[in-house]
Image 1 (cartoon, rainbow, N blue to C red):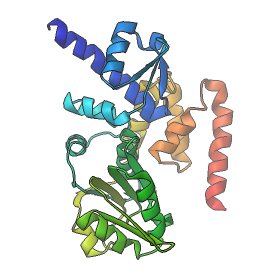
Image 2 (image 1 turned 90 degrees about the vertical axis):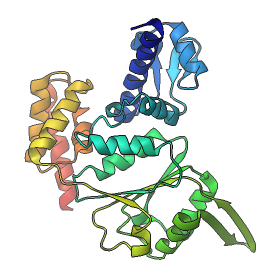
Image 3 (image 1 turned 90 degrees about the horizontal axis):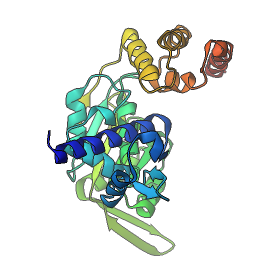
Length: 296
């Protein structure tokens, strides 16, 4: 390995660790001392526009899409989806799509299949140029206003099969077919062209109007088994330092699953409250409250 390759590898490792902390914990600012690089390397990352160096002390994530594209270029796909096990081909497809325009992808699968995890990851990786919309809680006018104000390059649409107002499909059809965003109000007409990608998530495609379905490349996902959920969450809790002790992490996961909590995201969030064996009582209270909430 020559010096250039070694330098690229160092930068790659820094970006991998940074993006995983960002995706898992929302961390966007890390001291250089915690990353294990010198100021000169940090300056290179800053000059490349990947991370911003502040006061020669901290690195900050200002444009996650730049980091995502860089790791995609290096074919480092797994760090961009830290809690999604398997689907290596889907991960590569998504990463390749970041460099395309007008490529729309729809993830279809039942609950606990990973479709929302994919959708949220895509949004987080492109937060500086994307918007996330829950179609089950959005009107056509609200969607148009959001797009006009944000003018994104990437649009993430969750619950695409459960629209709050089915007229939103006509709005989406115009966006997907022509890229036109037209808003008329207060005797004014405002417009711009959407030139980007649309990513959607749905439990089923049957209730989505055909002219909408036809605009998407459809990817079908299956439900994770309980054993897979146990493996994914236990590994994630330990690997990313949420609960360093493997035995304690396994106990947390088992208690959550036995209580009917099978959301990978929820289990990881709950795990953040457990730092030692003494926190198990707190864990039981959290699980109890979550179950009470579901029964109300």
